[in-house]
Image 1 (cartoon, helix red, strand yellow):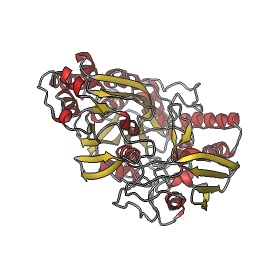
Image 2: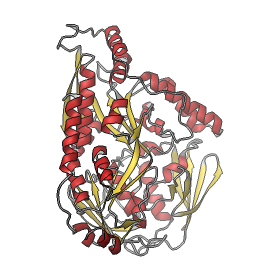
Image 3: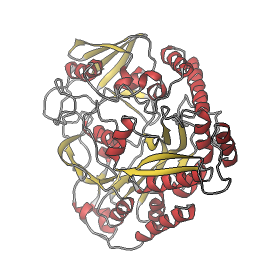
Image 4: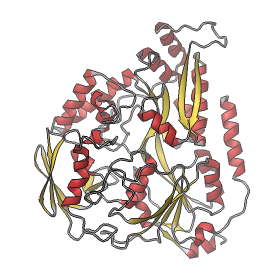
Length: 516
């Protein structure tokens, strides 16, 4: 598909939104009906690592600590978190905490949750975050002691983990937590229904519940918003459709700086992609600025890597990779892939790009395909349902793939994604990147207590990764929520956390004023 063809397709999507009548389905549903693109894959917070699963975790479960809007660790179930020494953290629990089934939440449950990651038989992509955890001890029913193998300055952020009842096996269907909502039912690839937790320790939600409706098609999510069939969409809406709805001036459109990072992942074990010159050429060929302008409609900023611009550890001196097809071609020449027929149709090499079936992602893949064709790289784009794509990525069955890292809040993510010890299933190094120098820098940043030294090492890591090009950076998201006028209290955190849904109210008066 040509770039003009992509833009025409987007225009057609917007045209579909121009007509249609409104119904009252969402308004009459007392729960807040939220449209999502894909359903969750695993409701166990210790296991599910995809975005859809994490969104449900935020509603069902509560953590020892949470991140505030400034990405600082603050108490949640823990009344306070104490660092007794360089390798010992102590969580002091609030009194009177209860799970959804009425049972008490105490130190036994916290210890069980985190001891799971110390169990050799427990498989989870989240395990790598706890590599430095040596033991979890119970001091008394309201005090849990975390003992580390070595100093790990970023450890507190890893306590943002939903607490499950003691004895809960991995992936258990019970789905009992202590969060603001209780599990009611789930229909696979259709909906998740949640009811308010009247005993939530911070007070019950301000609404009658949440229904997460799975609507895979971008256009349909836009139409369902326009007709009033759903109340709200957070980020799961095509930017072109956001613009159309914003121009109609009937919906609330809320934006805020985000953390989500879109990228093309590359398989370092693939013979073609093992050459850094090929990887750098791919990055130079992809016109990320055009993707931001035409596909994201400005709802993104250029990215230099996984660490978001608002982070204290961000390497602010790095500049995004320029769009330079000529230099890309020269790098491919140096790598031994000359263009066999000059400006003719024969490619220098062929690659496969795996992506999801989401409309925006498919359009973005088409642009990437076109950009790479200009430097003589033929790309076979293969679209899959998200669960299939994600399974292939976890098993290393790809040359290239497109995904997003969601909610990157701490620079320790560099360790979990790029350290050589973090390859699946232990961690998130899904492209099998390995560089002893990067490992050493990350290890130093992980163990030093000096904030300035930590930042310096993380900046060094970002510079070396930028040169090694294990990813093609596309953009960092600007969060956007589109909501019906009858909703009050719509707020976006940097993580676009669904936990804020508990503050939303549905107002009959506003709905009536909107023509219902």
